[in-house]
Image 1 (spheres, helix red, strand yellow):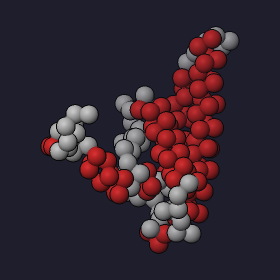
Image 2 (tube, rainbow, N blue to C red):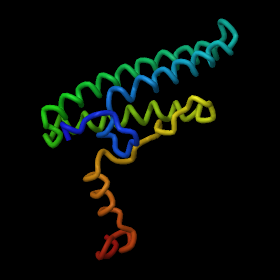
Image 3 (tube, helix red, strand yellow):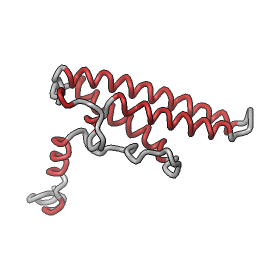
Image 4 (cartoon, rainbow, N blue to C red):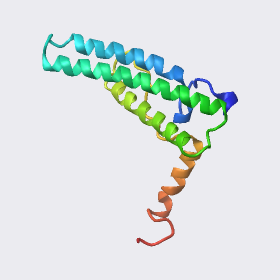
Length: 148
């Protein structure tokens, strides 16, 4: 994975996210939320809420960028299968990406919205295969066993 760690054209898994994926998402959200703030009356509670959302979203982008820089070190050092902190990091990347994508989805009709800004269901192919094996509905919810 280390030799192949670069921004992907098509995102399938959260392990494929790269620091460079955050910059355009951050720019898009900053611009859209600025528009929302400016449309609200000065001094209103709605404007305050919009300003807070813009501020929090900016810091979420910065936090995700930091997580992805740490993830890039894990990938380059070939530590992706190390248990503990590494697994927590990869889960955090997926969580924070999803959080920002949910905000961007509120602006999905905007011409600058990028369809790649979507929640990613799995960390990687192994995670997708594991989840598929656990949820194989062709054998029923309990596989070959009876209801407990």
